[in-house]
Image (tube, rainbow, N blue to C red; front, side):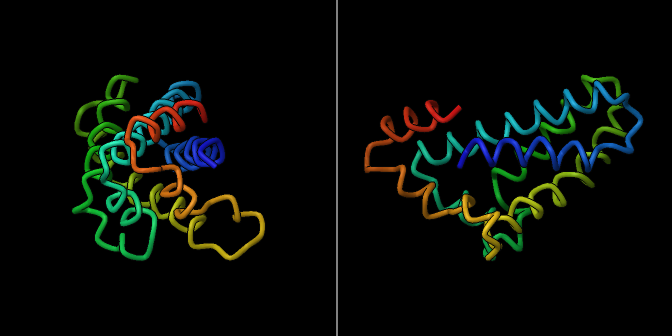
Length: 145
């Protein structure tokens, strides 16, 4: 499932950022880095026992994503990534603020979808990876990447 999530993250970030001032290669690199950062955040939260933040972000309860720590970190990091690719600080911040909510909502839609094609996106499967030992959960997640 994490492979699917990462693939979707790269795709959606690339789509959302396609019309920015960066070139195609820089945009694709930024999408790759942003999706990797999101996966890292999810791993850290699960490993640290903060599964509620992950569930909140990717479920109906995530309506107020602006207050979610994962979302806040992702939005800030996207701005840094875009700036490192050549955007001005102001443009990168604005792009991150516009891109992050749509990006997270598109992922959330997959978790909430009843379509067969989206059946691999299951929050329950993420929480089942936590057998009570954070080290085991982190190792399982690392093996998925």
